[in-house]
Image (cartoon, rainbow, N blue to C red):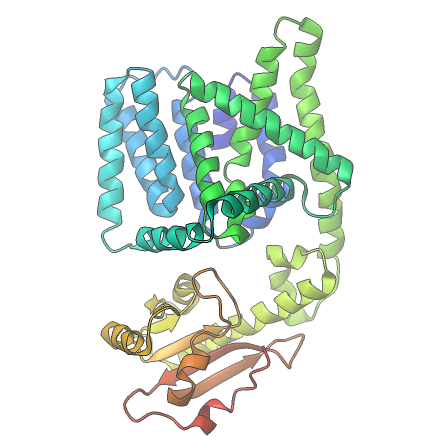
Length: 425
């Protein structure tokens, strides 16, 4: 709905705006991410609502309520994803370039919302540390690798992975056009153009290249809408071409969407064990390699069973350490915290862990940029862990999927206790 409103503000007819919004939602990158528990899904809604408020000639833009609502949306977006700060920067630049001092109220409200909500949130410092580490490898190599990653992320977002070289070149040309349109809009002080340029700059500098496609999925709908509107404006003097821009763009998106939808339908019809049927709605099930998809399905099935088992083994009043604390908290209904980082020394690790007061670990066979080791911190604390539950991959039973363990730092645990785990992950 927010995207449709934004497209309407760009000048599209109600039917064209609705068609674009539906097709954009069906693009491979967006469809995959919207099936998962990622904060980008919420951020996409908040950023789209912000753009819908600011694009075009909004008759409500002079009211105090409008400016407060805009500030709240931007503040909420910054709390949802750190990259949301680009919205605030774009608003500052927009107010300066358009000489609109009234937007200062929105800027103040957004800053207050972000500050109040981030008192107990310290992810920004972690990101800055990662930036410094990446920059130390050399600026030239850093930017070259990020530019290549940005292009690959754009292609995967719009068309998936199994595509021809012709489609690749077509999408790269579309990216170049979209970037040019964003630059032109930013030069005129348009909020959405400034936002797109700032967002792409942050994605290019982002210290986690594996997340590029995930990050691009929230800005791709904006870039596509801008591109279509820009081409229509460019060809306005030519009545024949002007009338075909929007239908042609909709046709292009349809050609990108339909082949991948067919592949998804075939994969969805593929039989799996009955206990894993519900997990076919996860985007990982639609990976290109069927064996990889089965592996991930079995992994998630075992993790889900382990989360249910967690409530039987650990009382609800006790907190738990987990590398994915939001997932642990969601499925177990308890407080969950990330364990101390792998970069901390042993003394600091134990000090921070004791300060949290949690005595149990929920360890998953999963990696993330923050925790690159599977089943972290099993290897680090092996002699001090009392294993309560070990779950194997439902499809590949030699692979350990999840472990629940009690940490006993005072008396310690023997090496044989830790060796009970079949560590074949």
